[in-house]
Image (cartoon, helix red, strand yellow):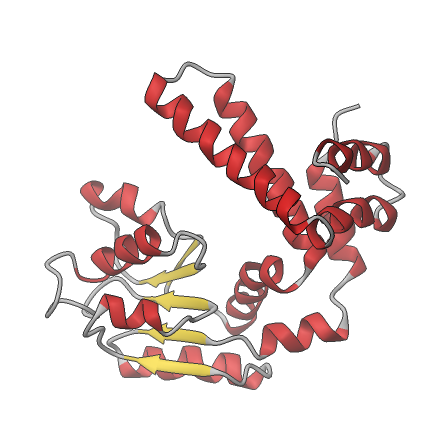
Amino acid sequence: MKLDLRSVEQQLDKRGDSAEVREAIRNSRICIIDDRIEDLKGLTDYLRAEGFTNLVEISKVTSVDGLISKNYDLVILDLTGVAGEISQDDGFGVLDSIKTARPALPVLVVTGTTTPPAKVAVVARADLVRAKPVKALELVSDVEALLRPYKDQYWAALEVLKELRRIDADLSGHLSATQRLSLWWRRRQLTSTLRAQSGSAIDAIVAIGQIVGGVAGPALKLVDIAQKFGH
């Protein structure tokens, strides 16, 4: 029986976050970038009101390398007026550079402008895109969703399984040799990561099966996956 990852996700969501995970998410280092001071203050105030304690506000990006080197857990990025001095592509260039240098760094794009056709592919690299104005509860929910896989081993394991499924679906389609090799290499990296951890991620996959026992068939399927990864 094919594992219904959406059902697993719903069950994990119903289970809720532990106190440790909630604290870790609230203490995450978040950089908020917006040239409009009132928007920057609004986004920051929303998060502070919900207990986020490690926020950095930036109205202008002076160096993308400098931004990346700060090791933020999440970047909230406006796309216009934030980096015109260093990039003709402004915030689009910042987004592209972040995702090229650190693909796993989650970026939430918050913008009040329409994306030009030539920049659609760049914006697609963001983990999530929201149009201004953003409501407080929506912002908090988005930030929690983006950070959860980095702070909760069960959500992390689920994200690995979802990514493996996406890769397998793509590999079954019509691809060039280069595209197929790239996807095959990505899949190998993911499975190698699971093998290398040989405890936390693999155990988390098995634990998901225990947590979501009400979902038809997931536990056995997840155990099978873990066994294939050398558990």
